Length: 425
Image (cartoon, rainbow, N blue to C red; front, side, top):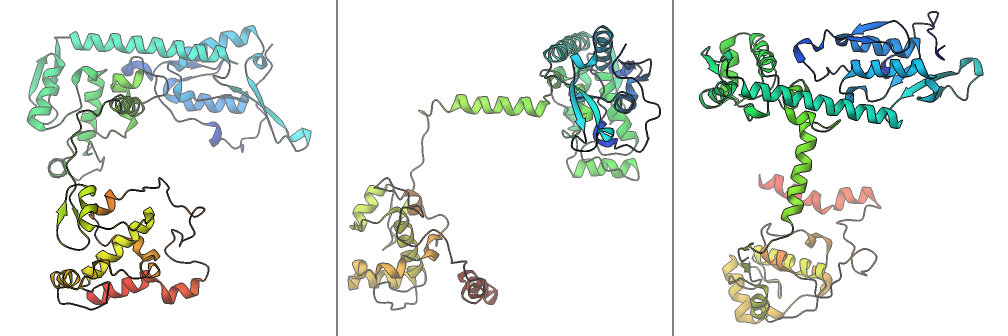
């Protein structure tokens, strides 16, 4: 006797959506897989594989059974047959986790649902075995297709007929029509794959963006002009035609490829001995001379202000801005060009006539005057300290005080910048 009996008197207005799973065909023979029968493992009810959701709804409503991650089960009919045998031998409670609904409500409103998932070692082993068997079947099918010299098919773009090995057709589409589906050796269930593509084209649908057009000429022009001569990699309907999607349980080609890319990056991190960096030329603050290294630059500027890192940043940005505005930072005299102000600074000896720290140690000078200022990139923190809000007594790294929002509206530096920009445009 089974523990969970069908309940035909159950109300039909139950919440069904959370207990339904999206259909995902098994990976055995694609052409015939939809005709396979799915038996219920607790009663005589059955359904076609193409109607898998109907069976899942039956399990949830009639037997209060939910199968976790059903989309990751490689061969669902075999999975159901296996558990049909096991449930006939032992009670379902020996295998399934029990989930009580409305646990805090009255006892008469409480129901027990049974969750069958891979937390159970037996279920996990079964899923892994089905996955391994499916992979073996797919690889055997792929090898048969690769060795088949009797392949015959018409090109979907020019109607030219090809015979022999399937790679001839795929290479033709790639070379003559710029339509590539990847390496032919990676494809499985080739005829079904080509049939799927042809049906999309016959329905006037773009293979990449999947938009539908009014006629074939418009579709052809669209795919040519938009460079849409490829399939949509985000469409999971194509996954079953690529061997990589069968390699690991629950992983698509994107998952496998991202892991491979990560491994490559980790391997390449070990050896950078052949790296040749191009020298960065930093422009002096006080003239137009360039030097390739910071040592030369510091010697050229002949100054050591003992500034912390962020103070160096603000100091450089302040000097750059003053000179860009043709204004001497030492005496605030304005000139007609940058060359004139630089000449003035040199002739008057104002290079070291620096203003008070409070003048340039301001938040607005965190922002670079020149985006490609190599001098900023080459600044070093000689003390090895990175200033933070906890360790510095200077102005924190916040552009403006946000405690008074009304004041910000009238005094914001960004507001002034936007006003200047709008007036200049």
